[in-house]
Structures are given as C-alpha cells and as structure tokens.
Length: 545
Image 1 (cartoon, one colour):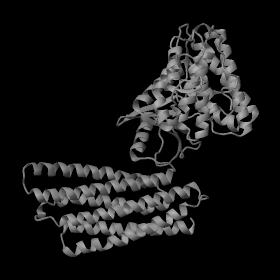
Image 2 (cartoon, rainbow, N blue to C red):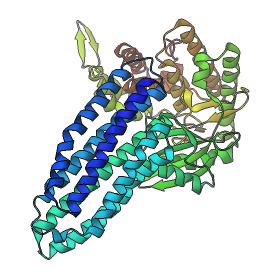
Image 3 (cartoon, one colour):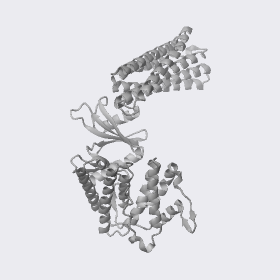
Image 4 (cartoon, rainbow, N blue to C red):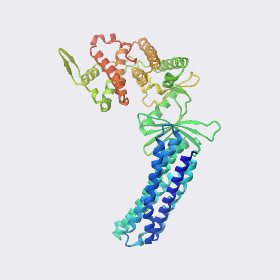
C-alpha cells in the first residue's frame, strides 16, 4: 500500500470515527433528552464536513493521474462515495436532534423501538474500517444488509405511528417521532451506498445488493455451490437491450469453475432461455447450456455455461491470418449447415423496411440532419428520405425468399464464439432467433464488420475479405435453392442495418458514411422495374470500407 492510500484511508477512519460519535450522541439525545448533548452533536458537524472535503479533494486530484491502475482508481472512487455518505449520516443525525426540539411529550418515544435502529447503524459503521482496509466482500455485504434491517424496523414503527395518528391522539409528538424515524431510515440508505461502494472496490464492477442477492439465488436454484464471499466477478458488457452479463469464477475451487450470469428484463431473458433450449435440442453444443433461471422483482437472471472461446470479432481484429482463415471457414460452414438442417419450403419475408420504420425515430434523435426533404436542382428532382423509405417499403412488401431457415436473429460478429482450438463454434445472445428469411442474418453480419470504427488499412482489408467470402457463400446457397431476388432483398437488409447502426455511432463522419451508403441503395432499388427484380445486383463494394 503506497503512502498516499494509507493517508487517505487514515483520514477516512477519522471521519468514520467522528460520525460514529455523532450518531452515539444523537442516540443519547433521543433516549435521554439532555440539553448539553444537543450542543455536542451540532458542534461536531463542521469538523465532519471539513474531513469529507479534504478526502474528496485529495482523491479527485489523484484520480486525474491517467497512469493510476484500475484497482487503485476503483478504491479511491469508493472512498469518495463512502466519505460523502458518512457526512450525510452525520447531517441526518443533526436533523434528528433538531426534530427533538418539537417534542412536548417525550413519552411517545419508545426506547425498545428506537434502540434497534441505532444498534444496527453502529454495527454497520464499525465494519467500515476493516472492510476498506482488507476489501472484505463479506463485510461490504453486511453493511448493505443493514439497510434492509433498518427498512424493516422503519416499516414496523411507521405502521404503529400510523395507527396512533388515525385516532387523533397526541398528533404533533407522533408526527415528530415519525420524522425522526424517517431520518434513521435515510441513514440506512447511506449505509447501503457505502456497502455498494465497497462491493465496487472489491470486485471492480458496479453491483447493487439486489443484484448480488439475485445472483446468489440463481446459483442456488441451479445447484451451483459457489461461496459468494469468495468469487471473482468480472463484467463482460451491458447489451444494447439493457441486459448485463458477467463471468463468475469460484476462487475456492482448485480449477476455478467459471459460469456466465446474465440479468435483465424478464421477458427478453425468458425468450432467450426458450431459444437456447430449442437450439440445444436442434444442434447440441451450439448454444451455451442453461444452468439455471430465476425471477426477482420483475427482472430475470440466468446462469449459463461458460464458453472458453474468442468472439469472431476479436479473431478478425487481432487473430493471425491462419486463425482468421480457420474461423471464417468454420463460421461459413456451420451457418450453411444450420440452414440446410432447418430449411423449410415455405416463403418468408424479413420486412426489413418495416423494421427500419419502427426504429427510424431513434436514429433521427441522434442524427436529425439525416431527414432531408425533396429537392430540385434545375431539371433534376431528388426525393426526400421519407419518400425513398416509403417507396422501398412498397417495393419490398411482395418480395419473399422461396425458403425459410432458422436464423440467429442478432448475428453480429461478437455473438459468435470460436473455441481456442479453432474447431468448435457457438452462438450466444439468441433471444431474437426465429424461422425466416436468411437475408436478416446476412445483412446484420456484414454490417457488424463494416461498422467497426477502426480504419487501419490492414484491418479494413481483412474485414472486406470476410464480407466478400460470407456474401459469396450465402449467395451460392440462395442460388442453389432457387432464390432469384436474393440481392434485392439483401439490399433492403443492408439499408436497415446501415441506418440503424448509426444510432450507436457518434463519430459524425462515419455515421454519415453508413447513412449515405443506405441512401445510395434506396435510390438504386427505387429505379428497379417490377419485371427486373431478379436482375438487380448489389454493387460489389457496398459493404467495403
């Protein structure tokens, strides 16, 4: 531990000690109303404020060092949160003392009802020093759970006072007491903030107590005997649909068993769970196995098998040429094998333009200048974006693939996992999977490669080669199955994927590049005659950058 961290921790201990003394004096005032005790609480308040300001100033100054390692950065951020909430607890103690001045009848204060609040608060405060010094996950959780106990005490006290108030007996004094309990409940909220800051400093990821409890429940339901006080907890990402995904490893096991934990909206997770089970029955080993599923307060959580592979995106960006060649061959081979296995001779239409119409406002919220009007330049008339979109929707409506296949549904390059030996292939994040037109998956995959915001010539050449190979292979599949409008339908899919991708691209020039390619395709398809649908071909470099 460096000297700076030692000093900051020591200052935090001074602050914690002063707040603990303040809470102790506050308890005395409430239980034994002696006037000098009121003065002792209020006089300490300025000292507490100065300690908090000093800690925050030093931490913020240190956090400006870009070379500071993440664990140290996480700890300093946690310390600033702890300091702020300690000061807030001190302020609440002062407010409680201030409320006691309105009592005219101290008999309303039931000592048996008040003492448990202060006892729980003191126990939580006493745990802070050790939790910070040792980054003790268990003590952090205990501090968080103090808030739950305080909430339970508050509910019980509130219900009793509400019954008394309904009788109209001693109203002013009981209202005053209710305000005091409310401040004690808010102290519990601050303790929860402190505990969650400690969880963040310990595991390196923001996690709330409710999420931790849901995770523990999910593991129990799945029959996984992880010791929650001794796990390695690493966030992978938060998906655009709002799901949070983490890898969890049990540090007590000799080989450190890994699982994946996913938490999000119950409907989406239920949909993904069902799709994963269907895929497992269809293609064993393709999706991760579902180990457990739980619901908590309208949110779902799912425990999945951990796949020890690399995303296709990472291989494309940083893998060797041999690794990329092997991965691309595996990806194309498996996609075509899945389509062959699931093909049904039923026409299908992905309705790409309808999908775009549902999302276009989100795009325009980010890039309002994309909506251009009808324009005339001399004898030349240019259609507005809205007109192009409407015409494309009408043109696409009767088009259909002659066959249907089961698609991934969100076939981005980071939803494909390749095992380290380069011979095993997996799908992840499959909640949109369904049987439909394969141009849906093809367009999503092609644009997921195009939209990578890296512009080094070597990387762009690799991404272009990937797109060429994937396009040629899937076009051959379509041709072999009598699909005569493949390029035209894929053009609509590319328009949708180009434009919707700009919602997440804040680099204006790159977003405009994708949008202009989409408009170019819209103008091309708008000139297609009904008798020439099968003659339409995609420009060779439309998905090259």
